[in-house]
Image (cartoon, rainbow, N blue to C red; front, side, top):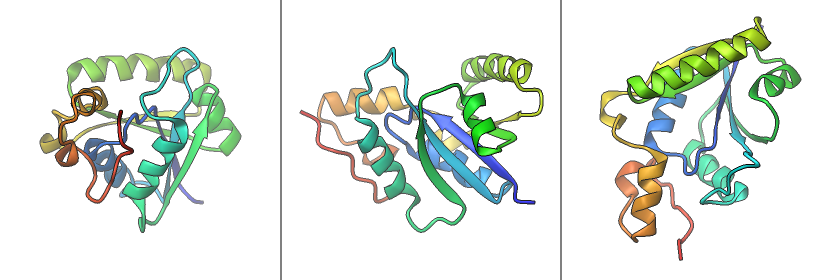
Length: 156
């Protein structure tokens, strides 16, 4: 039986830290579905299509990666796709506490779906999508925080 995990997030934008988590998840699963969530309460910095494009750039040539978008509960996406594992990355203890609370809620709604929380490798722990967005707003160079070869859309 193929082991598949869902790696959900807004990925606005997808960073080198996200790629680190994805690569490590691929050592445990046959396939990882990178699921870009649509949050109706938030306007993304990048459009959904731009975020999907960046992830496809970052994962080009990687086996076992599928990229999708979704607009419902993560647990419902797992059910729709027959996925029993969720992968989440954390940079620090604050991230961990947030992710643990979400994992606990998901477990209550779907006891058959397990969440794996993976700490990012130390060299990526300082990278956050919000920091990358701030650098972009000020027209700074974000290349060291993004997966190699990824080109972000121009920012006005």
